[in-house]
Length: 45
Image 1: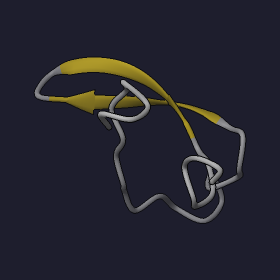
Image 2: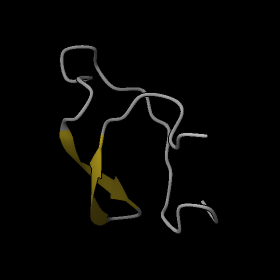
Image 3: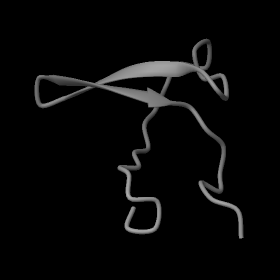
Image 4: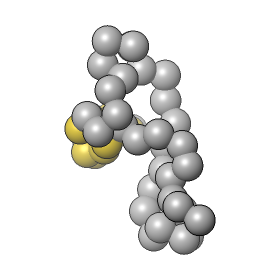
């Protein structure tokens, strides 16, 4: 996101683990990244 100066991703997550505020690890092309589950919108207007 150019506005947030951060990456944004969308993914399907098993509902047992899809809790807002939860920290998650994301594997992209063999590299691990940390992330957080948030609700829409990503930013406040």
